[in-house]
Image 1 (cartoon, rainbow, N blue to C red):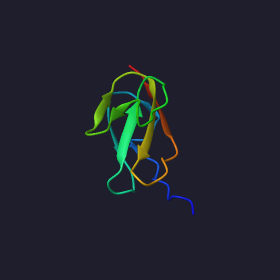
Image 2 (cartoon, rainbow, N blue to C red):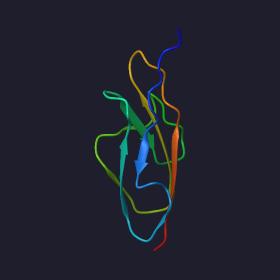
Image 3 (cartoon, rainbow, N blue to C red):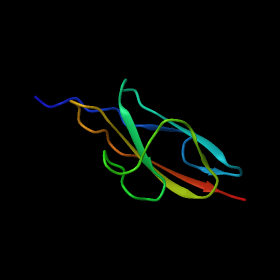
Image 4 (cartoon, rainbow, N blue to C red):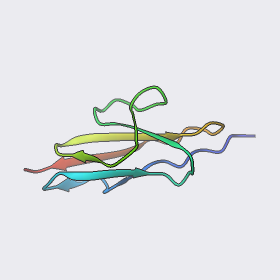
Length: 87
């Protein structure tokens, strides 16, 4: 039997074009999971990336990637958000 899969993280606000620094939060529908994210284009994993603990600022254009994982479950699909900050 296949292991259940962790829900993919959701970026808030979604990736888009903004005209000011954005405070970005991440969430997942799977209780007790761990979300890891990167802001440098590298693929996040259980061993790569930053553990999400609190909202972070996005003040320049970038591609954010995130995954969620939990013991006994399959790692989530990767979430991607592209932020364009127009000064």
